[in-house]
Length: 257
Image (cartoon, rainbow, N blue to C red; front, side, top):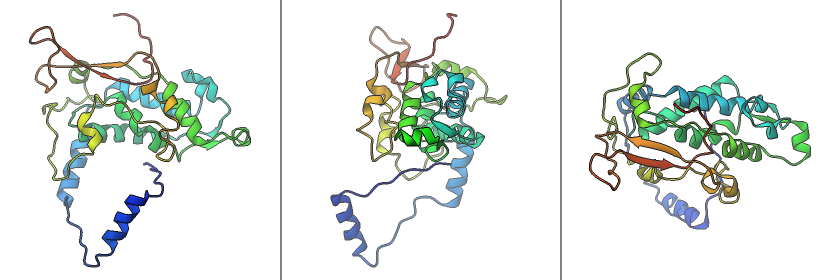
């Protein structure tokens, strides 16, 4: 489903690795049992994925096959082989799992964006011309994920729609189902307000940040939180609809109304 590049540890990290391995009697404490894993899988399958989110994932995959079809003509001729339909499936399943970890019952384009590099980096093959010019897969994916427009979707849309013909789960948006002993990753605690990670691999993140959406001007994705969530109301009176701004690639234009 994913290929996650892992570079060498820092000196401090490796020192800690050596220290821990010096304890021969070290043991691991389990934090999940099989029933927990099954429950998480079931909960992930109940996450609502709006059609706009699905279409965003499909446009990302299409950009690796026929880039001109989605307005990414600058990538034309760089890829010999694009991602397969399994990439589309992985993007949707991964986005649903990301939403679950963040305590949401619905997926957002942000979730697709943040896992797209790990889903795609081993699924595309560069053309001979790209290799001759010194272009890398990372170059292509950074350009793709930074420039491909993302859709706008509101929380109210996510709650009023239907997931592939099934009713949206009735659990509260602010609840993380099911509860597990393990704490979520530190970055998840501040999301969805946190800016997206760079599309570049861990070794180059920071170098290619100029291409990342958080550093490029353009419209931001606005997510309106419905009543009953834990979002604080904006200044101007009680009951006002709160909004959360999530930086993404410039949103596509849609007709008014």
